[in-house]
Image (cartoon, rainbow, N blue to C red; front, side, top):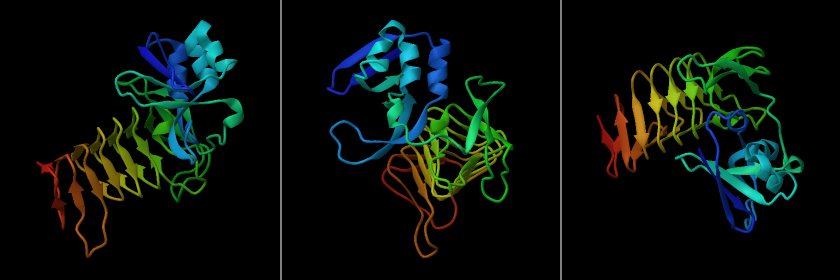
Length: 250
């Protein structure tokens, strides 16, 4: 597995590690979504993050570049190319008090683990309840105390996908790639959302599959829900729906 890191001055650094290396697997598992101010920026943005201590452990003899020098700003790995900002201890702004990632691995995909609620979430999830599967903390938001987003049953959120904003995954629904589920959206049954697709407040169910750069959003009754961009939707599209911009439904 190739690692690509960038220093605060723009200098890049690369190295290779085994994907099965315990330190690398721990860094991926502990990744999370957080607020950062990238070098040269003047405002915060939400980004994928990793702990500096985890990065240092992966880098081995070169770990001093992070643990002592604090030269590195970001790290990415694999083919997805998602940059993770390296968060140094004094910069940590929050800890996950919403859920924990357990040691209960998925039978087919052992890199995924069940989550367990650390507090009551919404009207149905109680502290101690087991949920679905995630690859790391970045898959399910936890920053807001009133965010009721949850992954239930055997549903999965993996890769760089993110579930937030009161959204719900349940049954055997899957969100992966760099897909984004937000705005109180609901995925259930065997629905699948992947690639760069965004589900914003909509409901995706049965065997529907939303991929590519599709955007599926809920709209007021007097407006058309729009599936736009380079959209690919496999399943049933019903109601007042407008498919535009090279969209394809089948």
